Length: 99
Length: 130
View 1 (tube, chains in turn cyan, green):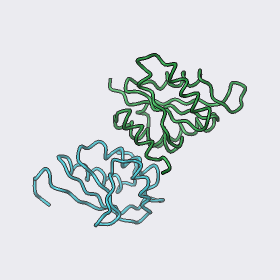
View 2 (cartoon, one colour):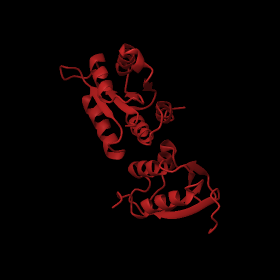
View 3 (tube, each protein chain N blue to C red):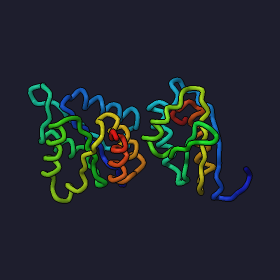
View 4 (cartoon, each protein chain N blue to C red):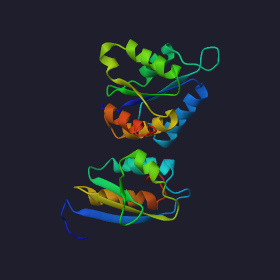
């Protein structure tokens, strides 16, 4: 995972501890954040997918990931590493606004 | 200044319209122009073309506005309001075939990223029952 290859597919996962899981407001926050990046970003509820487009608010809202599930993100593109870093950070800080 | 597509909420009930707008503001944020209208001047349920035109004006963006409606007259009066817009604005105002509350939140989320009017409308309309 140390390769500087810009187009490599990057994968990271995070446990969602947020009360209520990925409900409406967290879905909106993650989607808005994902849209700040040019990389293609997918969310899966298992390491093997199925994958949904993390920039699609309708699909993210429909994922309905409950509390204490693992969110798997994968991204591909120039800013893929930064994108996953930002998304994981948002889940880890419980969707609060950045300080 | 690059603005985002605006969102207009048209309900028979001012409470529904205002509540929907609250959900957009609290869930999505301030970066999307937003206006709502609903109710008749006597305090009852209803929609009016004048009020819809005024709401379109308040939420106007050079990127266009997406209009979310509830039932019957909200849709026909919105269509009439769009028809009455000046030529240069008419093609930039679309009525979304989507549930009003969910559609408004989804459309605003898409709009907040700077998406085109077409993408905003498509996002809201992904919610259509199959």
